Length: 198
Image (tube, rainbow, N blue to C red; front, side, top):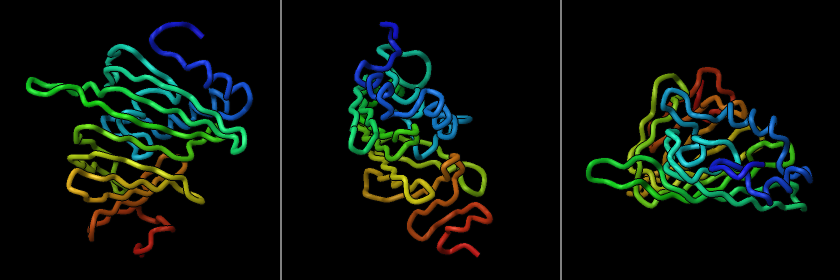
């Protein structure tokens, strides 16, 4: 481990050595599934998480969408998992606005698979996500994003400043399967778990 701007903290490395965070290769596979593509985020690793690798931090703007991000790791030997907690700022300042502070966390199991994640934004933000039926879904005024891993898929709830809830279902390989907002929904053709799909 070097002492540069981007590194894993000592506790997180200790967790990995004891088998509570999966291997670097296993975590890299997860990051590939849920990384941003063409300025579209995955609900599982939205802005604040998706710009960098699991358990990494940076103390300066590296052109990846974050101004900075600190990290601390906490292993749970009983569950065999590691939770990475983050604080930082999105690099989204403008002429009349400042960078957006955020706090976040993501938990990986002993095989490196993401079990849950969440991000809180101090100022409402706009993000674009890939739609299950193709195209984009832009959501404005996001204040919180929470994801849990179910029996087979990831279930995400996005909360906006006015209390609206947007819901996504994402496959373990990062494929968007289903989106719902109020009475409006979009789904990937052939998605077997969709409660209202033909």
